[in-house]
Image 1 (cartoon, rainbow, N blue to C red):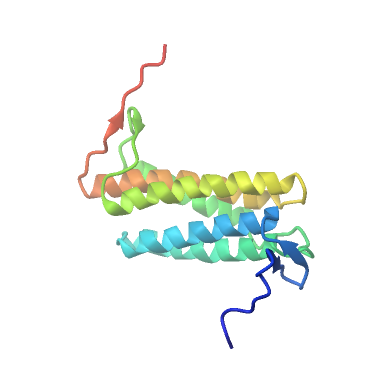
Image 2 (cartoon, rainbow, N blue to C red):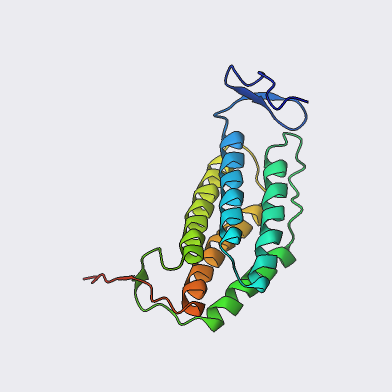
Length: 180
């Protein structure tokens, strides 16, 4: 089977179920953001993370893949495979990392070790994906658990970046801002 089909050469693509839409359809944009986030998580994994986080990140990649499929399906029954337990599990991961990591006293500039820097990239792409999903929710019903999951995910990547720098003894560059 050839990889290219030429079916997308006119700016259209096919959703799950066969419906043709333009490639700038909000559902396609959302799937692109989720795909990009998944690719960045793969990059993060290639830099090496503690085994506990490796397992979390692989699970997140699988969940993002399912979310993309659900949001691109026009017949999606508006019930995600995500559960409240998935959100609670991600929150527990955030809490665990936060308990192991000193709280930043100021704003933190993205950077540090390579894995932490990539975790910051994941955080920003997760936030973009969240904005895209919110935009999609203006036209299509989106399961609230999906938004909750993506929102927690950006928190997870932030605290993961802090933790990765902490365990590798890299002091983050801090951005000092006086708010008056």
